Length: 413
Image 1 (cartoon, one colour):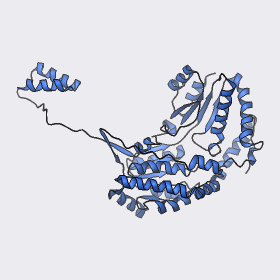
Image 2 (cartoon, rainbow, N blue to C red; image 1 turned 60 degrees about the horizontal axis):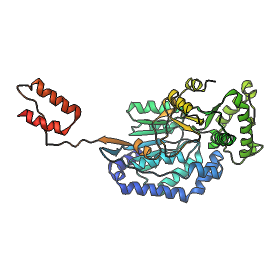
Image 3 (cartoon, rainbow, N blue to C red; image 1 turned 180 degrees about the horizontal axis):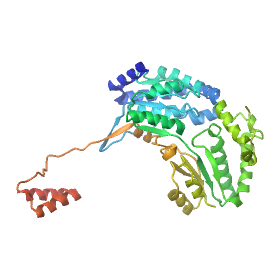
Image 4 (spheres, rainbow, N blue to C red; image 1 turned 90 degrees about the vertical axis):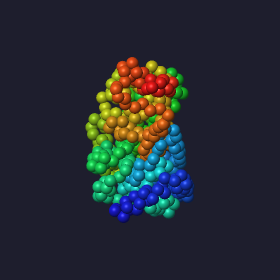
């Protein structure tokens, strides 16, 4: 651990990660890694999560590479050595996405993939050194004990994606060193379905809801729909349409579908099947349930702030109510997440944001720079300035107006 951390720190101290040439070279290498090894990545995702190749390509492999260095009065500088903890449900994309941001900002990086997706972790640990600067960008594999050892060290930034429980542990460890942290924790994401005016709009909405619930890693995602809020008299129609959509997407027996990823491990599997066996839950199941080894806004406000609120409505007044009366990391109307928007939570769903330029900002410090001038000098006087002259000086400071400052030059004489 000490050797790896030492190499990464020395790489950053050498200054090579700051050069535009190095950043472009590493990002190009990362593109080549993905393109050259798409089949390996896909097989690893299938091995760990049973992800269909189409899902693996959609969610894990085409990663937007956006690099927008800041200009103007703020000069961005790299934070230093970054520690990235990636998660098991999107073990490729949510490892490489923050890695791209950290590299584009000029940092050295240690990546800790999730041990819950061992095949993907192994692929990243083997491929990254072959394509990228292995002294400045390193991968450490292992379980909880390794994570504990990693957190004993001081980092310049920690980026964590995972559960709130582990997020608290990470934040506690970071606090000992005053290390800044970005936590992507997720939460219970609601969807509000308003009474849409046309059947075609409703069909589109239901299709998108079903896709967002079970499409991303079989619902094992921080952005997946957790619960759906509809008016009581509208619910039967929505339920029937959801049944038809699920059958269309996953067949009459979704348990036999090859398009659905599997539950990641036995512990999570048993937790979910335990819910289904609960008498109250079992009595409420209206479709599926098989397994193999009038106040929407108040309802949302009574729960922890979600990562995302989804709402399908054309009512502009209702949209304004959702925006003004709820709090969440993101609000999406009539569709689901967009890569060009910043992504991040609030309160219990995390803090900090990334994606595109926002990733660059997350892994940078914007240094404020003021260029002074020797043209004008306001100095203390003895005897003190008169009240009349001081009024002009105060006015100059308030207005920051060059003409008044010139006037002060005359007042000093």
